[in-house]
Length: 115
Length: 114
Image 1 (cartoon, rainbow over the protein chains, first blue to last red):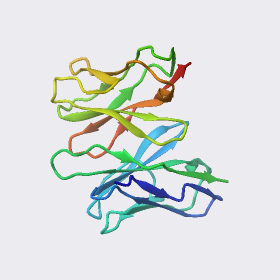
Image 2 (image 1 turned 120 degrees about the horizontal axis):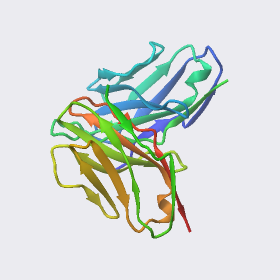
Image 3 (image 1 turned 30 degrees about the horizontal axis):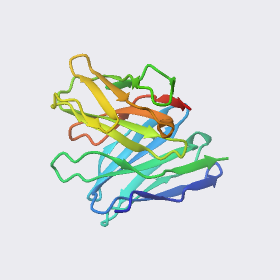
Image 4 (image 1 turned 135 degrees about the horizontal axis):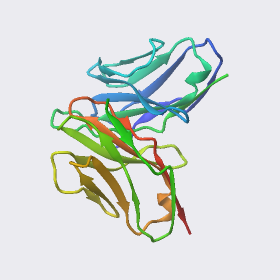
């Protein structure tokens, strides 16, 4: 079974631009979560989606948004990029059948550099 | 607020030795899950082991085992017969039941020397 895939793997943008990152979960997984990883702040939770609904959101400004499609694929968008948005963005999926299958499996990440 | 603390920023051991990574957490919840993930230089986050808080038995996965002390809120990872491929950042993480959000420690950089 294929793992979580993320595209693109690397991205360079300039301040003020916007960016969209994509995540395809493991087949059959219904939950998708997003995390930001930076050297200074470590790993921080952005948001989580299940059945096209955002169930949980971390403490990030409204410039960070996401969505999930009916096939469970997810996108996150960052508008008006700032230098501090440079980070590795990790996507994770989990089964979430209601039986406690909450373990999250991660994709390879998208490395975003904002100049 | 829930927090996860990894007190060892970096550790190094010789190949084939046993090493223990520490993790403590703070929560008032009773139902939760604990995880250890490793992140090698490739940056791929890989699940090492998981533990349900309601289970008293410590989880094991081949050379990896945990020492889960619920009352002390401690969740250490033991790696036996360490291998060069174990070199990575190791993160301890915590999730409430039905919360869907991992709360992470700062990580421990583990170096296995030949």
